[in-house]
Length: 294
Image 1: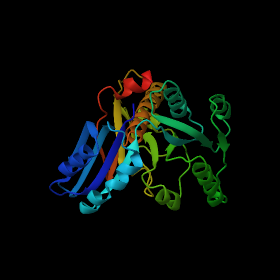
Image 2: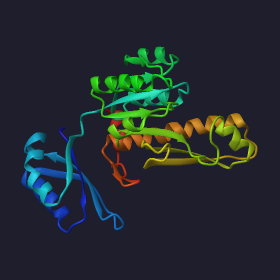
Image 3: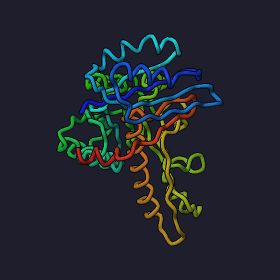
Image 4: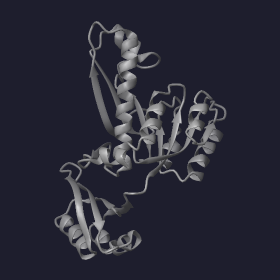
């Protein structure tokens, strides 16, 4: 069944919801799910609408016809085909738990994405990736070759037609230029101990301090290291009886889950940038189950 969604960001004004609903109704579309948020602090309005074109309206025609409404309300508006999977490039270094988790979720249909390439600065996961029939690119990065390496990375992204880059424990800092070019289209994952435990072995540091909560944060990447707008977070409780190795194991689990949820929100167009924050609408009932069944 053909199903589209419309995402809208604009200044808050009276009549936005009515204008959108009336336009879709006039085009023979039936709204099946709708989420909206009016931010009283920033004065911005956010909306995501899922709908079925019951009279066969084409995506391009809907977008073109919506131009006058979008101009009236100063909207950033985009129509999307919900049946099309988002093309994603994954970047990884030597910690493979998030990569392996994503490969599995995609294989069973639990994530609405197509992994079009995996890029690494090491060869550790070449065999795993190739066995999934996904192109693997090893691009070494040093201080001396960083501009050249990032240019090679962007060629892979552009040639593959990727809409999103996922840093699945990629341990290289991206340049300001790349962050700006891909603004809102790079997602990262890391532990939530920052700024307390920086550098190597953060889980060991946490164990030595008797930390009782381990968490993970997934966010959009900006030039400010690990400080981009947060999409998803979670925690798991620790007891005094657990070892440093338990901390690492539990930390990897929560990192994998949080990253997958952040990607799910982005791929379903449920995550919106709102200054230094995000607006993330909840998944519609049955979203995860229907993807697994598909």
